[in-house]
View 1 (spheres, helix red, strand yellow):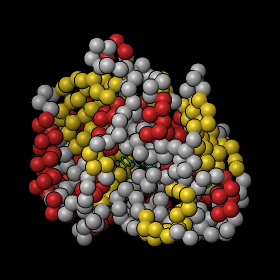
View 2: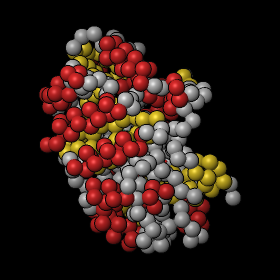
View 3: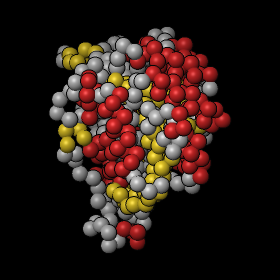
View 4: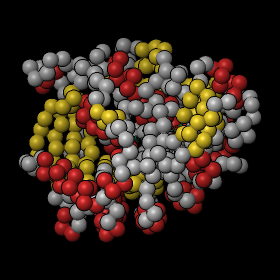
Amino acid sequence: MFVQEVYNWGRYPRQYAEVVPVRDLETLSEKLSSSQPWLARGMGRSYGDTALSSQILDMLPLKHFLRFDEQTGELEALAGATLDDVLKVFVPKGWFLPVTPGTKYVSLGGALAADVHGKNHHSEGSFSKHVRSFSLLTEKGELLEVSPENVDMFQSTAGGMGLTGIIVKLVLRLKPIETSYIRQESFKARNLDEIFALFEATQYATYSVAWINCLSQGQALGRSILMTGEHAFSDQVRGLKKTLLASHSNPKLVMPVDLPEVALNPFSIKAFNLLYYHKQIADKSTSIVHYDPFFYPLDSILHWNRMYGKRGFTQYQFVIPQEAGLPTMRSILQKIAQSGQGSFLAVLKAFGEQNDLISFPMKGYTLALDFAISDQLFPLLDRLDEMVLDAGGRLYLAKDVRMSADLFHKSYTRSAEWIEILKGLNPNCTFRSVQSDRLKITPW
Ligand SMILES: Cc1cc2nc3c(=O)[nH]c(=O)nc-3n(C[C@H](O)[C@H](O)[C@H](O)COP(=O)(O)OP(=O)(O)OC[C@H]3O[C@@H](n4cnc5c(N)ncnc54)[C@H](O)[C@@H]3O)c2cc1C
């Protein structure tokens, strides 16, 4: 038995676990028959404790592509393949991911288990909307073929954080592109009213995301930059770039050591935010950029999570329904600015309609904020939780590390229905995580 320290992207909390690399289905079946608790894990790019357990099945060795249909763009792949693997092979052939989170270092299984969203949720939905089917290995050792028509099984797995079983492979519909470039437009917003008006005015855009300076206060509360994007056509790129379909290269920069906690203080965060905002001089600018910096700006520095020091960090991500979006965001940003606990990164996105069983998105706005772990942080986040709940919103399980069981069950309004389905698929509670125990989802 090989026991090692495991943690996810936030490097908080840490746990000793037996980690079993899964190279074939036999290993999976053998482990599942051991009547011990298990949890599948991909790239560990969730932030908190959702991919932590005392016994982990490391799915990354199962990473082959099995089939690709050049007419429809349908790719059948094992769940340990990463978005990085898919892009490297299929961008040069003229295909792109239908939905991608802000890092390409996630596995297909992890993307479906969290039902990840990208900058195009308002226009193209979440990851699961582009999954035609997947194979799920259940507690009983059955390999089930699941398609969206099997509503209960599909929807309890998409966003179900590994609790229905092991996603072994899936069929994903890629989307055709003419070039690997994005036609990006950037807009400056002086405050929160302006950024919400800009989101409304740019609903036509396939991709949109805003980067908010959450230390600015008063008239400048919500000062931000909105970036929209479309896949560029060949005639928009020809003559500007050498190759129309170039995939990305591996990152060259590495954060070598943990930064001391003093490196990230309200002054350094303020300076960073000022620089970022003033970098763009005009109120609006247009450019042709490669997909890599557009979708994955943070991937350019390997191990950037070390920036937050040894204690680690967390990402607080919530969604607020459309009608309550602006006033609640205003109150939350005010509370954060007053607390002086700066967030280096604050990313605002618009969500389109989605009302699935356990998936995070709902029509409205989502804000994600990174905070270094400190003694003052959790009391602040407890206060933000109340505001999110009052507004009818909820927190993202893939980022969560501390919400209460009470908040989870009140804000995920269909949690009881979901748990009934879990009991049927996972009757002995084989699949459970540190998070599912904390949120009193398991045991039953
Ligand atoms: C820099 C950064 C940016 C991000 N941006 C976004 C974003 O824009 N949008 C977004 O939605 N998310 C975002 N995320 C979160 C990330 O996309 C999700 O947490 C995703 O689930 C990570 O995939 P993974 O392979 O690392 O899974 P892990 O972190 O290893 O696991 C996540 C969950 O999936 C389950 N799981 C993994 N593999 C399987 C499997 N084969 N079968 C069953 N269950 C499985 C695990 O049990 C766990 O519950 C971001 C993360 C980072 C670090």
